Length: 333
Ligand SMILES: [Zn+2]
Picture 1: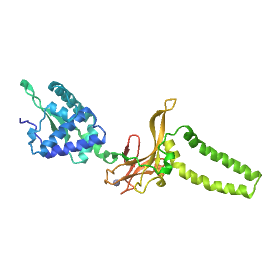
Picture 2 (picture 1 turned 180 degrees about the vertical axis):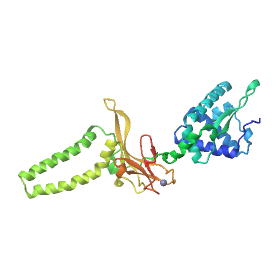
Picture 3 (picture 1 turned 135 degrees about the vertical axis):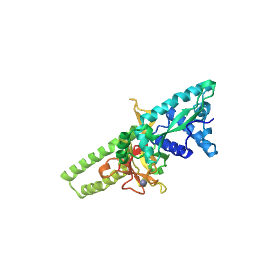
Picture 4 (picture 1 turned 90 degrees about the horizontal axis):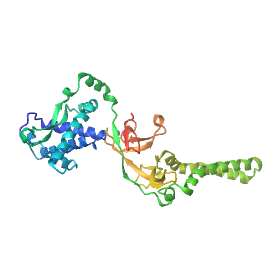
């Protein structure tokens, strides 16, 4: 079946791969219309690998539905499904036209994909395939100009994954991995208050009944409190901000960068709010600029108060935001 709009296979692969990367970057891969496109792309790619000719890269609605994990009971249902989402796909591309054409032009791509179908008149079966539309036909001059000025401001996004929840050392287990409730919550809240009460009592003791013992107690207090603070500070930070940098003494030698998070657990408080458990967690990401590993660090200077993702290769420039809830980040510099 020869079509009148055949395209170059190299351009087809290049364009589709680029658009696929774009969909991944904006997290649009779970849209049905995008699923249809990606299924068509997978089928097409398999055909390209097998040495098939471009004109043969046409597929039935059933094939596309099965490939995209949206199986339908009969041919008509499959055809309706693909036809509907084919239109959705074009609309989606249209709605993102500025961003997508900019993203593609940065990668040297000159086309945009569209889902086409063969003529079905006269009771013939409909086949679907990926077509290419020259980008210049889709965007006007004005948009093109605007995009070049925006080129440097496009945020580079990264995604964090959690590959491991490292086990804490045995002695630290009481501090972690257990729900923060009951006596433990009172302990966490009460400890700083206890410190204040002790400080007050020590002051009274030294002001009114000063002795060598009272001075010794005060000196001891001055040493113990900061060390206790340093020791427990990450746990308090994790409780307050839900995530904190795990101190090195809490980690095994194999782990060099980890965090403590206060994760919601199933069990609920009487008021309906969830209890939280503290756990050690590793977030991993790869720098999209240089492919190096990203470490989560405490932000300094303009990023004070935040945790940031810092590239191990270019720690001054490849700096990303870090959101442990969405597990996403954008280039901050
Ligand atoms: Zn980097």
